[in-house]
Image 1: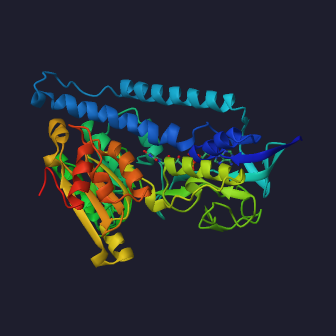
Image 2 (image 1 turned 90 degrees about the horizontal axis):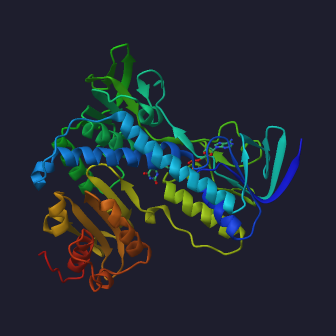
Image 3 (image 1 turned 60 degrees about the horizontal axis):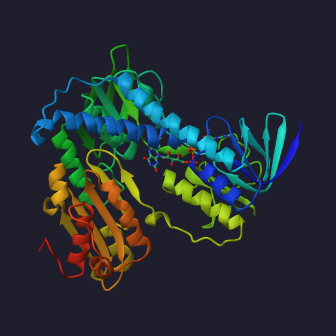
Length: 457
Ligand SMILES: Cc1cc2nc3c(=O)[nH]c(=O)nc-3n(C[C@H](O)[C@H](O)[C@H](O)COP(=O)(O)OP(=O)(O)OC[C@H]3O[C@@H](n4cnc5c(N)ncnc54)[C@H](O)[C@@H]3O)c2cc1C
């Protein structure tokens, strides 16, 4: 057995853990980064990057089917899934190589193997112990299922869905949140029939309600089936396919059932509780500075209750490294973290929904404006429809931005600056947006809220 001491030990090399390690090494700390699988974690290997590559292939399929509309003659011959996979894997492996190079260049000590806490700041990997003056827990998450719903065979999670070497003819998807609707979008564009089952009243149910409704209209128009407000009851499977039964007795037959009902924290059996760390339903409980109940032990990423997003993990990792470095970084509340659903159409948002803003500030203190993308030249050129909705406090800042339409995910960068810098619509209205861009829609919405609409009433 060998024992090694570091300033900081990071358990888990996904978005949260590797961001913490990179920033800590910049600040001059010695860092051990313990990873049992591949650096980059869920996001790089099984999440954000491969799914967005798939969605891009799906977009290319849609564009080639519709190319005659733009005066371009092409023949859509079909999807070569092996080539789609090669393209997707090429991107993942190139990003992975880049990340490994970066970690090496920053002189971070990578420990390969499964780690377990044996004391609050000591991790055992095999026979070796690694102790930090500070400890950062970043073990990430796994695909959850429902009680009694067993994963296996034709009942799959997103990980198996990504690895499929064929395009199913018909897929049922349990869960109309971000992962469910993104796979629905891909499979529909690849030619499958898709049926989503969502227990809540809307698809993308965490978004502004008016945006969710528009999203449902867009999916209906694409021929994606869904049932809302009805719970899943059971599923049976055989060699032919699956039969999903809902609690109202309705059934959905398909080749596969994708279970996309959320992600649970990967903390079981890792010694966290035995080390005295407070855990609630598997999540690691921290204060708003991401410190657990044990001083010097921090947690970042999907194991911390709240939004499970890669960029939240990056931000939390950087935050904790700076906190340990005494830099007193600023807390970013979850509500101010941008969210994007990369389906066709895309949904992007940051800040409060109108309803939440009204609940927080009062009905007479909040105004909202919906700018329809029909008035935006670039959106018209791209053949997309949608809305940019901006929510403000009267005589106060913008507190929410909600968008739907092709490519609106690229607009949320400006949106999160506006909300996080607490800009007033009047501040944004006087700035210039290039023409013709979709960003102009944001400009127009702010002009309207500032009382001086240009291309709107
Ligand atoms: C299909 C899908 C699509 C997604 N798309 C997006 C997206 O577009 N945008 C976005 O922002 N987010 C997306 N996410 C979410 C994003 O992937 C996660 O929020 C992010 O990966 C969380 O980072 P993390 O560091 O907390 O955990 P992870 O990335 O899960 O990393 C945890 C790491 O810890 C390692 N580990 C765990 N236990 C141990 C142990 N005992 N010893 C050693 N190593 C250990 C794991 O191997 C893993 O590498 C998606 C997720 C999925 C599943």
